[in-house]
Image (cartoon, rainbow, N blue to C red; front, side):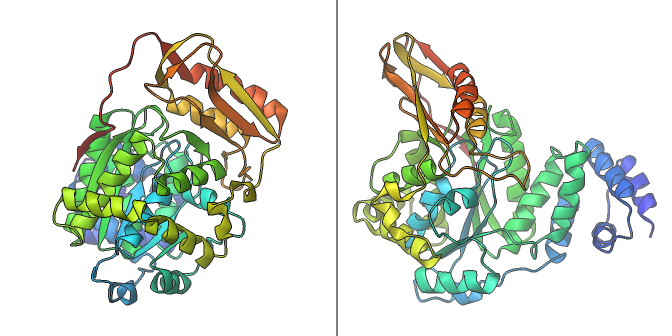
Length: 439
């Protein structure tokens, strides 16, 4: 078998066999295929696509390129669940759902061993947010991750190169060959990492809109359906929740500032958009792992976990278990504090009609909260707090948003982008669900 023949085959739109897919991944891993050959094959896939069987075989080959985490020690914990759940988001602005969902589910009896990533570009990363907590350690080896879940019921660590290394090699070439947005390649990348992470059940948050890489709900549905179908082919159960990212989630965008909003949620102080998404994803999980019979029962369990303070206690456990200072939950001054703050005030009165997610994220990155390259440092204390969000009424001169940074020039640069992001009109906007559909 020759790599060039497989490029030719895919160029003609023909379907690869399972053995051919495995040969492609093996050739990438042992470096027998040149980068220009793999790039040519990726471009052929981009234009010709792949069948579901091909993509499932590609996903399995990527999984087999590295380790697969064995979570059976957690699965056998005497908690009445017997299942391991996981969650994945395709990336958004102000997306702190993982910080809320993981302790909430753990407090309801679902053990969670989650691997998350860092932020890149305009989307934030869960690991960066957690590392804004003084002392919090995310660099866990697999054995340490499992032990922490056995001890406390939950753990969140940084993604490891021991899982799906073929995906890393493929992505590096996709990134420089304009083939990142090929649906089969995206789907195989996400599903391979989730299955290699060892969970039985995964709930996906697939976003669309100005703050997401997919711009329409139709595109998000297509990707979601692919991922759900691939997982089913490989014997795993996934659900996908298609959600809007036209506007930031909640009020906070940044790192420490999003952790604080997550803590406030677990204390019962929640915005409607975060509540809708968190409750829906939690209910899907509780029903799937057998801890609730229906959505009504699931919502009741979720409410009880929050009102009793148990979900917040699990968040404190997570922090303490991973070396962080659990007292941040009650004293936000323990987070690194920014040197400067600037308030944007409304120039007219009316309703907040829109806050563009992408422009808000870009402004936040200018403040120092994001990175262009993986090697860039970020400022955990930088961020944006939206004093007013979609649908709320604002009077002339009232504060609409507050910017935080450690450099006045950064605030000056970010301010103009954030002002452009905010639209105020005299008429009240129509409210609709942020969930487009569930697959």
